[in-house]
Length: 571
Image (cartoon, rainbow, N blue to C red; front, side, top):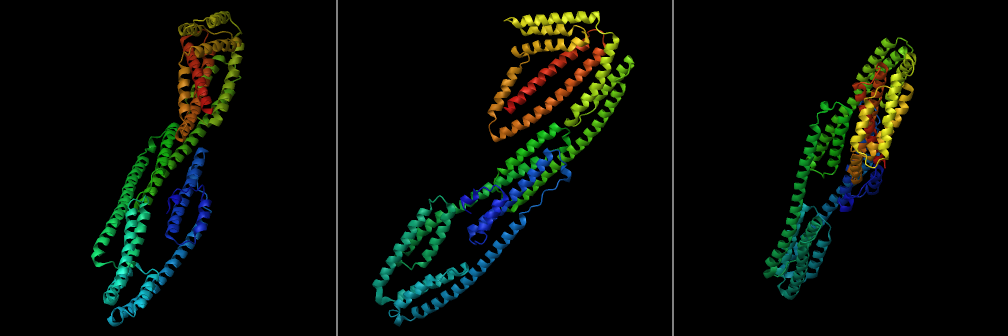
């Protein structure tokens, strides 16, 4: 198979079928090699399609356990063309065998006539032209079975020797023939010696075989030169034959290395403990590893024909075990998410049944317990999580807002706290206008804010929004959490990820950040709800409220940083 054929890339199986149809009736060895290559390429492309379909099912939250690949609609055509090729080659082989049998009979008949002339010493001179004609006819007859070649040429050369030895009356003519034969054999030596430096080792070896056939067809040279000219030709042949042997030894060595590399990859896949993968993150990380191993497999060349198919079957089976286990895990996870959703729906219904209650203390305790129970329930589907939380929170808000109104509106302590918080806001504004603001000053004011008790409910969000805007300004400009440095490092990492492998890594990074963002947002909602419950129960500031408020602020800052990283990736 030519180098051009080996480097040919087919985009799909139809292209392979089209090329196969073009050469299906060709019976050369090169065509046979290309057809074998096309067959292998076809099934490799088919496997890639099946793997892509399965991957699409998995990424689409499909049920891989019941997945079945689409039928191969082109395979019947492939088999039809391969049958045509086999029949064509069989016919070619049969015709060639018949032709070689006919050629053998012709050569034997010519040799028999040469025997008659060569053994009749009295008439060799008269039959010289006839003998030369028989030589010509013998050489013009086509190929015979390789097992008969040496015997035919041996008899042919022996008869030539007998004839020319008997042709004593025409020594000048014989010497001229010796000279011509020497010239031709010298030319063959020259060409054979050049083959020793030909880049294409296979082509050099094949040409050498042709030169040997030509050598056999050339008559003898002068007796005193026969050993010398043959020794030269033989030496040149030895060089070509050794390069040919070294070439195939190198191929075997590479195939052995490829076999070891493929065995190692099989062992890596087989060593994966799927029972240790207990969450989505672990499965996603291990899936990335498996896909990387599959790409590495594609980059390894062929192993020996005897084991290459077995290695591929072993590798594919190990991958199938992994992806089947993954499909089972996600199927089980979906069932757990559905069960969690049912539990959260039940909590929503309980909260909605309590939202209009005027039993302030009892209902507050009940709702706080429901909120704790909510927090202990595992995750649900991302599509349902936010809507369920909003439903649950809305029911709680109805009760606590009604409770707030019933307790009596604004109180003197809350008004005093509001004045204190307004004072903190003014200090922050003054610090913002200063040119020498320090992180410690900001943190002291934040601590002062957190130690102040509740403010009137209606003013709470407005005050906090103003306060948060100022604090966010300082966190950003003073980089109090090192966020800018982290974002700059992340942006540099993304910038350097220009390769295909880096792009895949960034895609995986974005999925991880998206999941982190959803988790942080859920945590933030939980803290906000906890603060609402604690605000409803507490009549003054306390350490728990301050701690939760700081955690809430940290969460909000972390959420903004994750969003910024996602935006960097999307750019």
